[in-house]
Length: 361
Image (cartoon, rainbow, N blue to C red; front, top):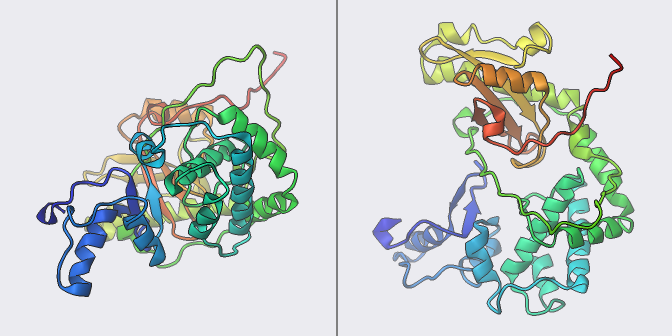
């Protein structure tokens, strides 16, 4: 990047179609011109943004991901940061739920075309502003326990209460959404064959700061029809396939990458061999022979999808802060990858109490 005057991207990234990694969009387009025209564009000749690099890459079929809320809001709202009106929110939420239903049913659709179609119906919003509002809707859906739309990473927003009300109202008009979500979550999982283990380790997604709404005079309780994210944890076939995926990776890591075949032979799928309750699923090893305790959480959804941990798993992670790894396997049916959280889980995520055990003694 430095050779052609490009600094690190702040807002716009392009997702690598094979590995899922996020790459600097401006530099990719600028340097790609060397192959096409024999001359690379410099940063001065090719300013990035919504109207240039994003449109070029999406026209070529790439997925452009917008990150960094602060910088993106500056680009998204040239007239200043303004709350969306109720009518604008209703239009965008309806569009979002339509795309989500298609995504869960495995139907193709064009997010860029949807975004452009909304432009003329909204009050001077840019495409980047629409992109971020879709991410805000994803955050609401995630809180309601629904799957989220690939490419729209959930982002918190100060209009959460308004968005939640509109989403709940619109859901009544999308009867197919529940059927699509149920089918997607309950779909059987097939074990991964011949994965490219060189490309399956992913970066840990950054933990977002939570935006608190102004205190209400009463507690707002949000009705949840079905918590599909929680329901996915009961898809035992998916969970087992994810655990076997991590077992295979660990054996490959030790035998093929590190040349330690004897240690690779000792990797054990303890959840399958001994049963649950130990606080981890897989026993593996470091290069020096010290143990690695791996707890595996698998989803067919994206890397920021919430997951559930037991009190036993939390306690075990605290007792083995150097050796415990929580392996979050994501996008399992399409392009399975995983990241690792090392040590106590609460150091990396927000923990919300979901269920309490009640007894009379």
